[in-house]
Length: 100
Image (cartoon, rainbow, N blue to C red; front, side, top):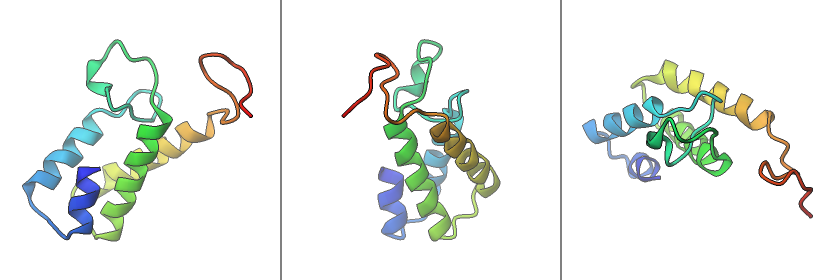
């Protein structure tokens, strides 16, 4: 979220690059992200919420013509979308019960 705010504020320095590096480094094997991803190997799956936040931030990178690691951001974006498409959004992963 901080990276998105910095991009919207037209702040462009090495801190942005460090944040992009961090985000890309902690993409999970399932294609998504989890805010607690650095606690690996204990986490087994991504968080839909965190993945959506990362996708929104990647969109801000594109909107602000960020070229730093743009090919990796594009690949991670595709993997995030694939992750989201595999979700049964009307069911809970933990309970397998339908939500109203």
